[in-house]
Length: 386
Image 1 (tube, rainbow, N blue to C red):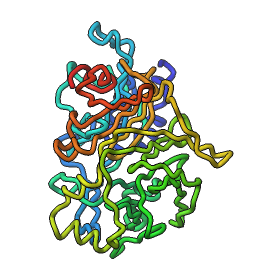
Image 2 (tube, rainbow, N blue to C red):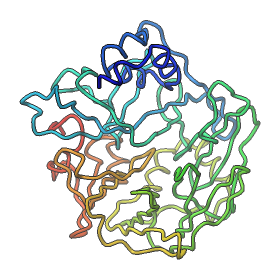
Image 3 (cartoon, helix red, strand yellow):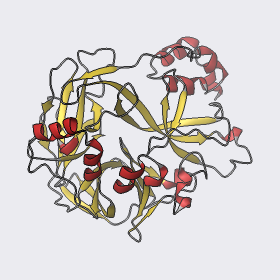
Image 4 (cartoon, rainbow, N blue to C red):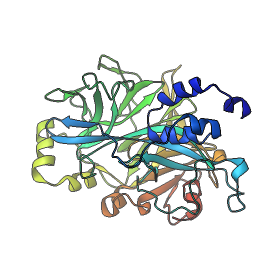
């Protein structure tokens, strides 16, 4: 640590100016005393500016772009107390309030964590970023209806250069669309007859998967190019997950059927969503209970899908705005070879609450609510409080 502490102030100034958010700046200041004094503490008295996107129809909304980070929250060894002596780390989502204050969220439900068994001093804790997540919210903080998942496109786009800023989104009924700031409408990508289930950034490139399990690469020119053979999985919802550098698909086999757009064109669906006021009903139809899950790994060299029987020490976390893979060895009380996900029926009834989190165990192919198997909640912060 002494070598890091002795870095010249000019170098520390250069590093601090490259940090994207106040969360990063707070963590930067927590490294050591010299780093703390090299960067001034951000003011929490003034509201920080938000990036507002004026989305065109059918959404017709002034949307605030929110970025969070899914992190491994570690307790630094020299600050371990007897209470945390057993701990390794916890999974948490980190965001910031409109005044730049640190906020901890559940990585699946996005619920703000208001309780903590100890003071969150950033000298005592270290946050290791595992993934980024994005959401679009209205001024009243509710999510913009109709957008399932999205990413800034390209990822390197500067928020300050709105002329080049765009978003790539999967909308209700699985349509893939692109919008650049200033455009009067959305550009629909790919085959209009296809439904796309998920989108991911893998190896710094964008990929989507359709309901048949075919993965497509999205070229920087926005051309959608087939990347894998069809999986032909019979599940009704497919999620893309990167694990140890490889691409996986989780195919959910639900109890019920997911609604399709076979009888509607895009305009009909959007008219239904935004003129009928029945967004919640459509959401409930489009999310199904996962009674069974199948996992497949893409063999890039052979161009085939491999049926995965075990994840070994890996845990797949299927969040609402991002999915990731973690090793149970790095988390307190972690149990590998399982998948954490949001249940469709509970999602519709209870919203984004802890009761809607389920765990699927590949070993015995069982699925249980997290509150029924509390030992599986130990990987989340705060400990033992679900």
